[in-house]
Amino acid sequence: MNFGVGELNVRKANLPNIMDKYAFTPKTNPSFNINYRSKSVNLFLQTDGIVRKRVNSNEFTTRIYSNGNPNINSQFLENRTQELYNIKAGLDWFIDDSNKLTLYSLFQDEYHIDRGDVPYDFISDGSRKRLWSWAEDENTRFINYAGNFTHNFKQVGHTLDVGFLYTKGGEDELFPFTDTSDTGNSTDETHLLVDEIVTDLNVDYVKPLRSGRIELGSKVEIRKIPISYKINPGTNSVLDPNLGEWSEYNQDVYALYANLIHEGEKLDIEGGLRVEQTTINYDIDPANIYYTKNDAYNYFKFFPNVRLTLKADKNNKISAFYNRRIDRPGEFELRPFPKYDDPEILKTGNPYLRPQFTQTFELAYKTKWKGGSVYLAGFYRSIKDIFERIFTNDNTTPNTIINSIPQNLGKGSNLGFEITLEQTVTNNWDVNGSFNWYTNKINAFSGTSIYPSPQPFYFDESKSNTWNFKLNNNITLPYKMDFQLSAVYYAPNIIPQGKVKERYSVDFGLKKNVLKDKGEIKLSATDLLNTFGIKKSIIGDGFNLTSTNYYETQVITLGMKYKF
Image (tube, rainbow, N blue to C red; front, side):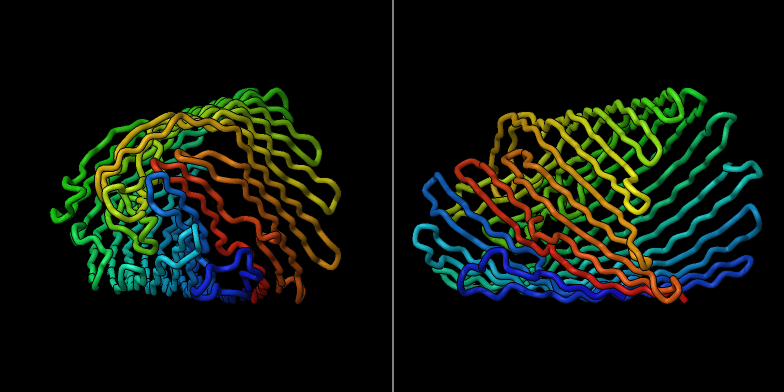
């Protein structure tokens, strides 16, 4: 059982005449796990739940326009009340000494109520221009059915695994909102239904060799996401009636891979290749006047990986790595329907978005000694088809709407180094940390956003030197207590249209064993200094936008665990 409280102080006062921000937000997190084991069967049941309040967002934004529109301050305040429950039940069947079958089902149910206010004030005199309020009710459910069969051959490490996973889930979001402005009042409503059906099948085979092993495998993933989107416009409605009422995303992935690993006395060599055939079909309601064509494409791609490790002696290694990976956009980034939680900084997905590909080259040296080690690596990453949200101003409308839509933005790269250190300082004190420095480069790019009208955008090539730092201390105290103190720092960095400012956090944890080590009491705190808010600045065509999100990051938790 864990109990917590967050949002312990006010980092910035609300704009006037809006709802109060949640304070001293309570959290309760019970869990219960049980299993029964016989010679041939292991039955298990795992459950947990979260009931909490939190400040999901508290973002202050300033927009400065150069095209004659009035400059505006706004606050995006979102209070959330949430319940989340997980139940996982299943069995391991030890058929014989060589074969095991695991079957389980996982059920997840999440319900939250969001209450939000977004006031907009003129910067010149602070007068109220508009107040936007909403009351979102959302229920998300997922159920997973999974099975895994493992066969162990007579040779140690010689295995065959066959896995199956079927997931069916859905999101039901009712989103009523009220607009109070100098041009009149209105009450609108959207109703979003999202289903997600995923079927995965994988086969993995490992065969030890005289000095190494071979790994072979395959994976099939079939994903289907139909969406229903209904609107209920009111008087002076801001809703867009030209988006249609549905879309359906289908993604089929077929992959094969092979890895060959040689482990020698002086040299380790690993070479592998994953081959992937992917087919995408995105059907869009013909009533949508912006995205007028269904999206359908496929690609056949190779994803190689190579690793060479030279072992000078038992304490010193030099390694070289290369790999290529893919990052696919998520459903929210692809969804062609707006999210009306902030109608003047309007977030919409892009159904024509493509995946992002990254190639990584790394040269590393590791040395270890009694009680510690250091890892030093230089790396270069080449990124193609970067996807990131772009902010544009729709100058065809008389208002000040900024549209935030993800786009593929060409190429970028990272060049830098990383140091990771582990050290036992005393018998009771261990330290580990890392320092990462790199040059981040984003190439110049121009493009056009489609929604709600063709909006060209352009940004020059940008480059910055940035770094991050992480440090973790683990200390064993008397009376069976353990203490942990961690710190993390992210330096300023660039994004395609601007910068993200620095952010840092200090966390701690204290644990004590009780009741003859059958019990455990834990006290922890995240972001002790309350400094982990997200700050960014955006430079767009005809406007500048700066924002700081003081969302809830500081939480103190007291937990108790008992093993029967």
